[in-house]
Each structure stands twice: as C-alpha cells, then as structure tokens.
Image (cartoon, rainbow, N blue to C red; front, side):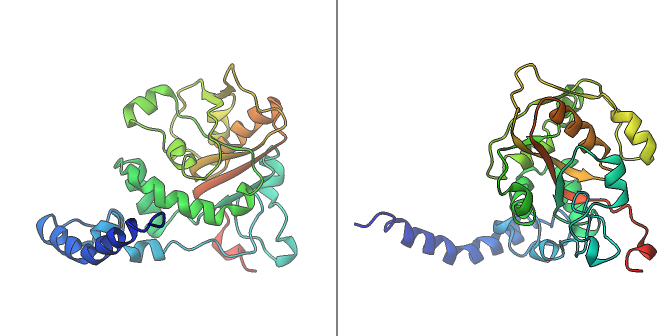
Length: 258
C-alpha cells in the first residue's frame, strides 16, 4: 500500500463530517467569534470567523522599510521615514501584518488579554506571509521578553508564542531586567524613557554575526523594538530586523497621500 494511502479516506471522511460537527457545535455550544462576537458558523475551523480574517488587510505601499508607516511617494518606497532615520538606527528593516485597528485589533486583544493562545497559529501564518522579506535569510527569531512578574500574571509571553510559528530557530537571548510600565497609554517620549536600558542580553547569548528578526505582537512608536535591537547589535548581531502582528500608525491621515 502506498505511503499515506490509508490516511486519504480518513481525511475525506473528516472533511465530509465537518459540516455536521459544525452544526452540532453551533446548536449545543453557540460559540461566538473571538473578534466580532457574532455566532460562528464553522467553529471547527477556529475561534475567529472567516469574515474577520478576510478583513485583515496589509498596509498598502509605499510604506517605510522599517516601521511600515505610509510614505508620501513611491520614490521613497525602499527608504526609511524621518522618524526611523532618527529614532530607530539599530533596526535594518521591518514588516507588520497590518494596522492595529478593526478585526486585527480585536483578534490580538483576544489572543493577548483573553488568553486565546490558539490564535498564535493563524497569526503566525499571516506573519510568515507578510513578513517573508525579513524572514527569508534570517538565522533566527528573537521574541521581545516580558518581565517575569508580568509573564507570571499573564501566564505566557505572546511574542514567544508568535515567534514559535515562524519557521525559524527561536532564541530567547534577551531579558527584561526592569518591570517597566505598560507602554499603552504613554506618549512617544515617555515610551523611550520607559524602556531605556530595560533590556539586557542573557549571559549565554551568542548572536555574533547572526541576522536576527525581533518579534512582537504590536508596535506603536517602535521604542521597545529599538531598545532590544540596540542590545543585540552591541552583542555582535550582524543585522536586526523586526516583525510584528500589527502596527499602530503614527502618521497623520491628512498628510499620508498629499
């Protein structure tokens, strides 16, 4: 019997029975989408509905090669924006899945705050797809660390869960030595001060000559990513890139397409 022949009928049977299973789950449990809260019609396929996933659009070009914020013209399409030239000198390139709004924001909040950790798998697939340019020849991925107290309260590090889905060796070579305030409600300059010297390389760090992709869930000002990149470059990394599941765009809407 050819290898895998026995599994084909089983796979076909599962596919044929899935609509029945979806119907039973919808009737008995009445599950709702983790993002939009509408009833799930195909709960066997995941906890977020297809409409919400379809609404997660990439940021249209031209955009900054580091932070993905919109640029004013195509002539700048392979360049950094002014903020990245000034504030993120240790990051060589970066990509994100999309803007931190709408369904993507709801998905990430369910993942991070509601502990719906199964969402790391589909989010990771999107990160692989839209971050292919920074992942292609990278040697490893490095998750942005949480302070041990915050990780203990949350139960997991969302950046590590995402990093494990990207198809590259995962190296936890950074440590957050200060339990910094959450960046969510801080203005840009306060964010920079908040994470200054907050990260150190672990004692067994060996990153000399490596092309590294820093991974996090959301980037706003990029202060956390830049603070981590600075430590990795000081430890000898050949290049540090970034990949996030979402980006909070900081460009004024009126100025984007003038």
